[in-house]
Image (cartoon, rainbow, N blue to C red; front, side, top):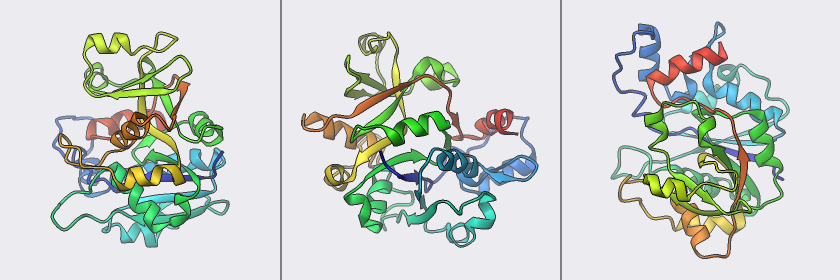
Length: 280
């Protein structure tokens, strides 16, 4: 069990800022999507930021220490977060980490780097258990409770791919989480072939994917985050690469916690329309 969670919300939002032909979005919403961090795009009559819906579920799930990873340019959010978030925060501790961008880059160095910089800025995470999630996904209270309360030191929510209500083309690009009969992670397979998919079904006949809702043992995982290399295809340091290195040595088990449900995702402008259907 842990009371701490890291929310990764410092991405460049490059896919969100791409042009769209979706005529269901108002010009005002398009302008907002082009100018704001994804997590701060507003929904509802009271214009509540997307991240507030996630935070509500996190707080209701029992987390007490919330670390929000932001970009260097998000100083206004960090200084005025209580007014911006529009939710009750008296029962939790909010901490802000800054994901600094290397001098030779224009974009952040990836999700693994976001976690590493947070651990370095808040050293207590190096010796404690903590969870990690995306700032542009809305996870259910059920999933958050499961990952917070698990007795396993390292774990991830293993989503049933069929339960995710994403377009088929998008789902087909997801990496597959291959688990054994005890739901221990064996491998993460990027761009799997049909044969690989069939060979990676779990004991229930389901295909499992990760949506970056995870738990780590800070003491055991820190060196893996610290030594993570840049993924040549993505040109970033990614959490899946950290996980693959952790399990490849055979000394650390990562437990898959099975669940079948949808996860609201806010990656592109088209996702805004889908999110509006559920939280307005």
